[in-house]
Image 1 (tube, rainbow, N blue to C red):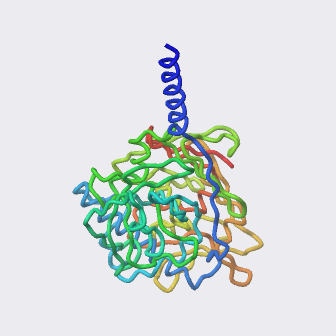
Image 2 (cartoon, one colour):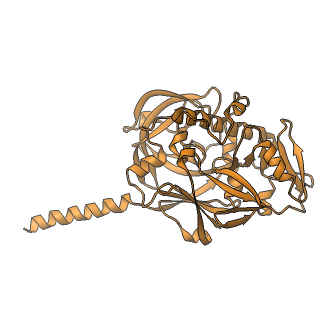
Length: 383
């Protein structure tokens, strides 16, 4: 009798420990590389080329997965620009977080990208041969996301986030080192599966955690700050990260993206919330139209004919974003993307081929943003 009770008690303890370790919520500290390219205009063209390559790849994946053309971009226009994409050095302006890959817990830094769906690791990062749990999928990929001639093999393996381990995550491993900073080992996509390079039976990163019920709730809360420590809350919403309450908007997973309508100084703009893009991008005519309405902003074109907004650094314009009943005013520090003498440039760039706006990190740094996979919605609040 005593022995039976002891076994049941031990099983109950083991079960409670397993339950506690599985249904998790936790905070990850995000780190930005010290070698930021934010104020280096020489790299701006390479940055824009990388954005074109990413969205061209997404459009191709979306068409293959749905038979439809993505409404957010004109892929034929973008493809004319995307044939010679440089390595993604500029991704070091994004935010790094350490994850563990494989049975041997390879500690690697990655970028969480809500504007793509795949896990893509560069050649000097994740080593599948050293992991006993890796499974070669006997297929290859073409990483147009990275460069015109990059590619590699596809595996499945475990990935651990704050010690919580998901099995059978699809991982593309590039033959080339497409990320050149020391801490950059790869990209983890957090968009919807219709942008994935693989079929629906191959789980994306978020799907693996969701299907295996590893999180209290399948939410990812980004609180990015331009000049201080930033955080990603996973499986929970940390109300201490924002003031007031969250405003919510529903999104459609069938779009592939985290898309919503955002007002900019009263102008309606349909756009994508993208942690993996380090600037705000819009169709050329759309951006020109907005910039022409901003007091104190001079509209200029770069060598490729793309529109940009410049202003007197001592007299910045007022730019307000509104979404989900919340309003965010762009601070001066974020507004000064580039400086030339007494002139400063806004963190916005026009380009033909984009039907939707791309709201990258300059927008994200004004808010705490929640990506809720369980309820297909976005939450916004002031930091």
